[in-house]
Image (cartoon, rainbow, N blue to C red):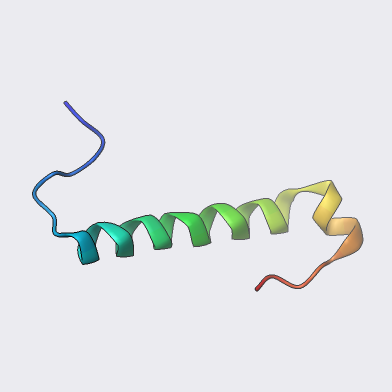
Length: 43
């Protein structure tokens, strides 16, 4: 079994990847002591 869904077109795959990246950055920003103490704005 593969993690990458091969039956999606490029736009659908990019959308899923973008949503995952947004979640990852938000999670790191909200839960990392580095970002918690500095509170740089997330772009």
